[in-house]
Length: 247
Ligand SMILES: NC(=O)c1ccc[n+]([C@@H]2O[C@H](COP(=O)([O-])OP(=O)(O)OC[C@H]3O[C@@H](n4cnc5c(N)ncnc54)[C@H](OP(=O)(O)O)[C@@H]3O)[C@@H](O)[C@H]2O)c1
Image (cartoon, rainbow, N blue to C red; front, side):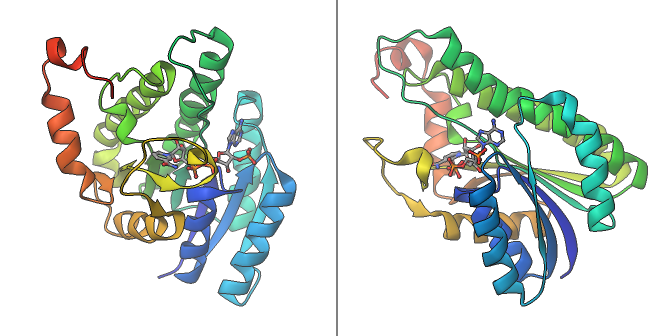
């Protein structure tokens, strides 16, 4: 398989691992994030996997929405077209059980949701016009319910999920697929030091599963699939019970 993919949030974790899997499948990739040194490391690894210059890097902070139009056009030109877009950028700062911090919450919403919306709007127009393309959003099981732990993160992922669903419905007539990925716990910088994690899998394993869902243009998928059962239960716990549960 060959193709061209743009990954936002490609300097570490799931986005970086996915870049490696995609170049292994024959893709050319554009890697976007803030940390140039990390992007260069990922790019070098991608080029080694591919055995050719398959990766390009672009430094960008997703909170700078004004940069999106020009950067997107540049990336599409550099790649010679685009058929796959992945939004993997995200932040999850520590938030204490008694903490209500509007600055942290704004950061979470800006990176996980508003940055995604800015990029997805640009990508949607291009894919609709060319009448093909696959959009993949790395959401989370955290978007399924408003749990106690991270109010803004749960809200951001729920909003991201719903935005992706609307895009899926809007773009379906134009042969554009929208894949929503809801990972469980993945061993990345984001989960380091966090307690109470289980069923943790590596970013590389998650990336292989995600690449398969992109290839097959699936709609909504939990990664790994066993989280679907957990999500089904959590979604159906009545509110009067859920509010008493420390999860
Ligand atoms: N790890 C898990 O258990 C888990 C579970 C469910 C969902 N997810 C989701 O998976 C996605 C990837 O997370 P990860 O676990 O791979 O964590 P990670 O290793 O911390 O990766 C986060 C990525 O987002 C980028 N990013 C953060 N802020 C940014 C900004 N302002 N502008 C541009 N890029 C920014 C980071 O790059 P720079 O810092 O270089 O900018 C990095 O490439 C996130 O959306 C996360 O919510 C993770």
